Length: 334
Image (spheres, helix red, strand yellow):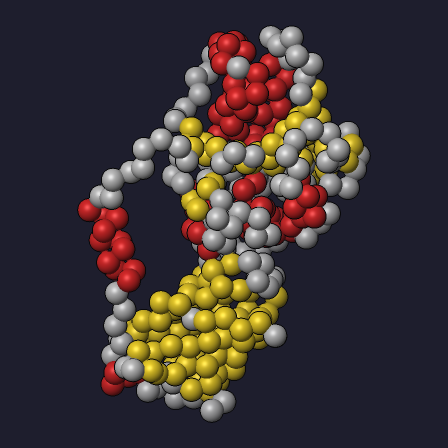
């Protein structure tokens, strides 16, 4: 079994090193040959981590011709701003390297098991690779998983077949131990647990077994999400065509909005370049208009908007999970 742990600039040390130690420990107990390698998308180099910029050597380039496990760690950095040292920016920067294309190809290969720790799943999600897939990440990133049309599962580990994802930073130990159990058997995983004096936490979630009975909170959430109301006396203020700009941390987006009313229900579309999408869940509360909208640039996201108007001007913000809010400003053109 060959395991490749992929490093990128800003990666979290514990996300990568904890699984590395688990896999190395497994080699002591298994009759099967196990090799573990730290790699990058670019090849052999020193990789600067997000923890005090500590550098770790990667021995080679991610090799998709090798069957086995590929593990993607998350990033370490600030979670309070949208600067270059922030976790979202480091994860986004990782998607702008050769890693993006390699991961797309890896998901197509039946002899490769892709796994992630913490924010590693967000790297896949930002590239639209988790659409319709069950996954987990750090609790602060679960909203972003939803925004990229993944199916977030609040579990320590989620096994979605050829994709295994882990939650917060310490889940790297649990993910690696589960992978050892899944690929080499429970006796070897148990031996590593005894060596580390650590017991894996939580139940591994898989889409098998009996389905859950819908609970009262699920019914409430469904009722709330399906219910929309428009205050007709204020609706006319928003109707028309708007030229807006969304200032995201990674560039400005120019969007044309067309808001109209049909049979007493507000509806709308947005045009970004040649792409036209509908505005979902339009809802007017007080003097603020809410909606959600799917975009593909600068990444695949389901953005949630809240806007107000001042005469012929529109202003507000767009939000997607843990990504910083993006300011919105525009004006009426008809």
